[in-house]
Image (cartoon, rainbow, N blue to C red):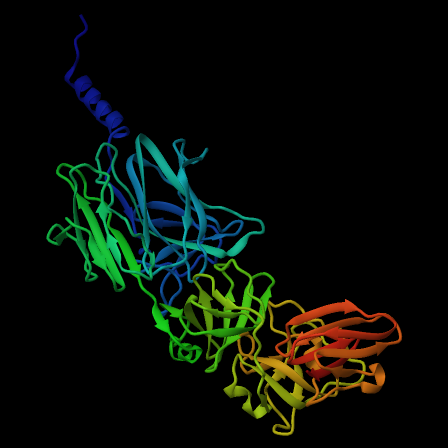
Length: 544
């Protein structure tokens, strides 16, 4: 019989201990990315050693101002973008056993956060497989959301987060990740509380029910902003919420690890009756994260959808620009729509408000018009985002051959200002108007919008919505000898020597009719009002 020596026994015990250590629980992993201090990774993948291990990340973010657009709990967080090479973060180390994976996430700035997927690797990062379901990140509503996924794997494992790359890659889809946690295998964690009213914007009082999927769990909550503990209020009956409230919750059960904290923000927008009030709601810089609901009535004066929607509208107090660069609205709004009911946040760009929408407008009626007041260039600073008429406007660069180009500034002046910092230009991000490529006139009466929304422009600029508004007469009918234009009742009569393209616009610039004339006498019947008729390259203002 073989005799076991004391040394052999000791070695066997050590070997068994080491073998078991690779299969049993390691300490719960928690990483808040607050140390070491790393300013930035320039949106390119980089290895960084944290207390938990080495992570490969694309962007490290830290707050620099009170209105910082990154979502951070503490000093730093991670950011992923839906762009190739910037759409992931992952562990370059293994954790021995995993119970529940959880972390906080929130969309960057006002961006639509896009979508990300969790992947795991059990072979030291050689192969990755998707776990759970893809996570859609909503627009920022004021608080981090918490993701939780039961893993229950007894072995070495690591995780990766990957954002979905859409076509084309979308830089406006960005998400912050913070407070990454993996509990031990075999240690049961109580399921986070779930609210019947999730984080979001509400317009009616909410009866909020809280539940945990863990049988017998007790839910503790606060509504005063403090961290919930077992000394906090115990949830027993639905909470009646009628004002903006942050509900912070945890779930506790005997013999189990406490749940991650779940934060629910029930927000009610502040009502705004006039557009002028938005000018008082701007933050010092950046975006005021409060939500406002416009309950007044305004008329759309310009609406463009190129890469995103941009829209000017005004009421009897002010004009304003809505910029839906993150694509939260779905309906098309046309010039002349009377609108109300939109919920927005207010961004400050060049000392003027720019609205970021949360929902679509309610359209009250269509075909409305605004008669633009006649102003001078000296009045421009007091008419930001409004539709106006400027008479006897000189284009200093006109030479008989130079033409209008896209998003190009042109020097202008009128009798009130021989020199001015206001320029004539087409806004960036908007489709090219139909007068691009035409010869710049020396002097015209024009209908135009006043804007101050381009970050590269520090002063005001003006732009005409279409060619017809670049040639507006003070009154009556122009070019009567050319087309023999006349009116009778509700009908405009004119003559053409050859088939010509004819367009009739409302005074607000909306196209009313478009057709090709016949040789000789033509007519077009309209309702009473003021119209601009364009025959080929000749424009006429007509009163019926």
